[in-house]
Length: 239
Image (cartoon, rainbow, N blue to C red):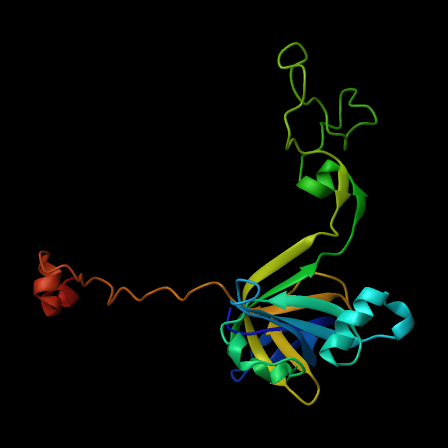
């Protein structure tokens, strides 16, 4: 990935673009992050940097955690995360990354932990249908119902939908647009929704998606063996 930063979800709002359309956006407090550790090809076998985010009291860290941070000679940080960036060589321990590592128009992937919903049934958790509500349906309209034959295979196969713990799992939303960046306020505004509650920790990274290649003008082939490829003007004039 090219760029990355750690932040917190502030919440959602809406803004108006240059043509007056409403754009739903999420505000993220991104950074400042400090480079805690730098891994190299010679020592660890790969290149990466470890970023630290949000100051924390010394009493809330263990001795190994404090020793790791004191080795970098930086203020104590609550959250640490390693990123394999393309320009790791240009970063050094102690360098500070702010929201302006990203720019307006960049595409990003955002990772967070989704809101926990507790123990949920199959209708809420998996979108299952309820049973018929007439002719003696009984008080089981939102239950899972029959799950398979009894004699053979005499068991339920792994992966069968059912009630259980919903949410509170890592989710990544890909290819979101950055609408605004404010380095003074440590603010990144992205189009759309991101996982997690207000105040939830998020990782903002350059997207892994690639822009699709343009195939040319519609109706005109790049294949010279086709008539439209040999004479594009004739093909474009054809109705």
